[in-house]
Amino acid sequence: DDDGMMDPTVQSLLDSTTLKWIFVGGKGGVGKTTNSSALSILLSQVRRSVLVISTDPAHNLSDAFDQKFSKEPQLVNGFSNLYAMEVDPTVEQPEGDLVESGGKSSLFADLSSSIPGIDEAMSFGELLKTVKSMEYDCIVFDTAPTGHTLRLLSFPQVLDKALSKLMTMKAQFGGILTAMQGMLGAGVPGGEDELFSRLEGMKTLIDDVNRQFQDASQTTFVCVCIAEFLSLYETERLVQELTKQGIDASVIIVNQLLYPPSKQKCAELGSQHSVSPEAVAAIAKSLSHCRIAMQAKYVVQMEELYDDFHLVKLPLLDSEVRGVENLRRIGGYLTTPYNPE
Image 1 (cartoon, one colour):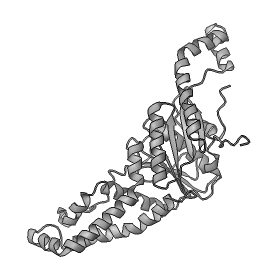
Image 2 (image 1 turned 30 degrees about the horizontal axis):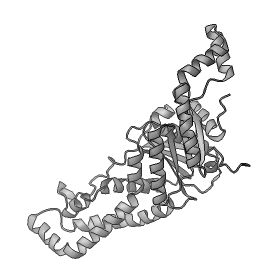
Image 3 (image 1 turned 180 degrees about the vertical axis):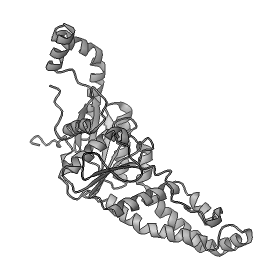
Image 4 (image 1 turned 90 degrees about the vertical axis):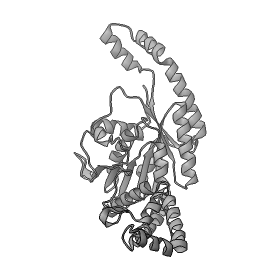
């Protein structure tokens, strides 16, 4: 822009031809699903094929599109290149995951599962492996609330640490542990080799994903928040963590902003209730003045704090956002700054 401000829209995401992974995250209840769904619709107009995935156990994608989705990608009604799927990376475990035949857990599997976050990391790794094999042009992740998201994004480091720890343990105690397993009848001989080959097989995927996640031309994180203290605090924590992990974040969406009713809206309401438009404006002001002032204060803080981000401001709508038409309306606000008048 002429005054040096960043464009307050998501246009930069639509203009990129190389972006492969777009994560949409933030505090619970700020409108991540609505925004990731609206963004995926916009992307489907400029990209060959788009997949939107919900990794939130609440699975609101079905509600947003008003269409039931499952853990397999499904074409969204009315589109030829937009797909959606809902998975829970903390629950989706492949059959027999880290457990040997006969139902007896291998000693190495027990050791590996004692590493914090390893189950979640491995199942998220499986998810990414599946998604990569599908070859979509662009993948939008509608992620779970912030803490959960940060754990998922740090999974390459978790697996890397787990692998090197287990390698060290195998080198130091491999013979003893195998002998103990034989004596105690725990697990199947060579069970730990299967675990290691699986972990090592994942190493290539981890390195590849890590490279992609830290490449700003391929991966970006869109932070969604509302103009309140806790949400602002959470967004700052998220931005700092992403910076620490080398993941690009350049778009912040401030959702659910309240504005005084426009003159046209005041006139409509006035004629409906036989009062003057001025009276409607005065009533609206007295009812919402405090909240508008509070939001304005936090918006100013965000503009100062994130002056090098695309800060997109969305209005609080007068109805629930469900169905493609309403999502397109949100998409309009994501690409053209909202004018209260």
